[in-house]
Image 1 (cartoon, one colour):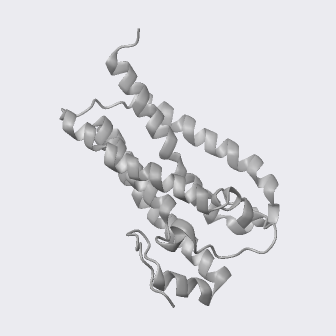
Image 2 (cartoon, rainbow, N blue to C red):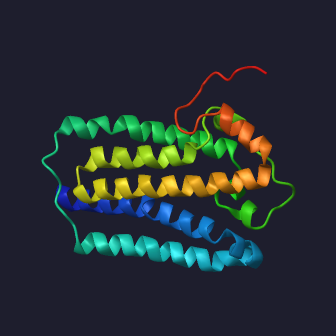
Length: 199
């Protein structure tokens, strides 16, 4: 039967492999979006192997550079329920509001019909629920595991997502123009406004 420490190591590896490659992958997609649009959806024959290589790299580097956990109070581990719970809530709301083709950039690479700016559901309260979800997930994973490597991965994730957000907002402003600028003025990026002003 696996020991508690080996189970924790497995959990840490799983968490890192789940969220650390995401901002790198999004940078890869947004950074070369014009090229992927020219290639079309067949570009995912490149994207998917690249993403799998990123996941494998995370698992490999964690196996050779596995720093031990801090002396972590159990109470802090239990506190992880809060950011992880909010992260799950945001994930549910995001997938209920945004079509999967948009979330995974299929629609941006090869549009199917006219793109429209989504301002309803969770996007009526916050502009970047997906990136807040990843940031809270990273924070929750630090609290849950108490591993320095997870903390470092969380910081890297949040910093890279900041770059992705700037790239994405530039793309949206270029595509939707004044409609997106008005939406950006009305809806906050990360701190939800649960009651929008009536116009």
